[in-house]
Image 1: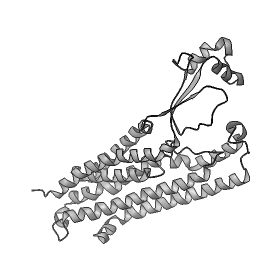
Image 2: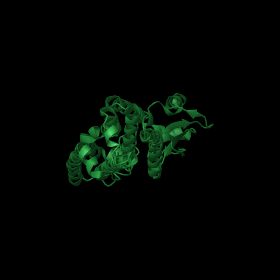
Image 3: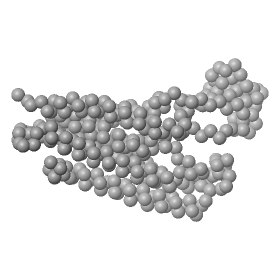
Image 4: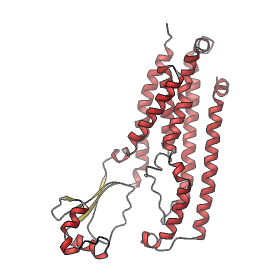
Length: 321
């Protein structure tokens, strides 16, 4: 069965491996270029304490290197699972039903159950490994940029689903969804179309969902001196007045127009705001919740996919009369 699985699906495997290799080579070249820029233009010593003023040139240069390929990489959380589901998962059973080969394949010495375990299990494992490989490639690339002078926020929507177990969870759930669509619809092209549509809906539906995976922590800034807090994911930022009432920046500016002026960029404006009882509040998720959120999203993706896949497999194992 493993030999047959390889013979039937080697094109998908080889194309996926080739694309991962091309992506790895592209990110390697870009990462080496960024590392060279970092070596030639080391950040100032006071970068961490005065990021915007001291690191403007360094930040601009590193940002230019990152986004030279970052925009392309940023499409992968949507495109890669959709392609896996449509071209790996959907044809797996739909093609057998559509061509009628199931009547021959599943009446030989290999039972339906063994056939499904070998093909779905084997290809599912390959898809999972491919997702983990993508996560490792992108994580190694981002590590080149990540430093105190240019910190990479792995909670950023551009990277969150491209590192850790995120790609593996998305790829595997899309694959199972495609298998289920093929088993239930039993036509290859409609199953592929449904898989693509559901993957797109899942991506955009979960795009901003991580902020709701846990109760955010709360930080109140009461002085103009600032703080060492570097929140990984800001859920909400607002002001409160001396009575604790929530205020927008416009409300604050209007209330402080006489005592503090209207130039919010002036150094004295922030001090004046805090002196008049205003406080800046941030609701945020710290960086320590990264893996918790990764596993939470993996569960959100995989549990429904496996439930639907179980229904599809059960229907496939039941002989048609």
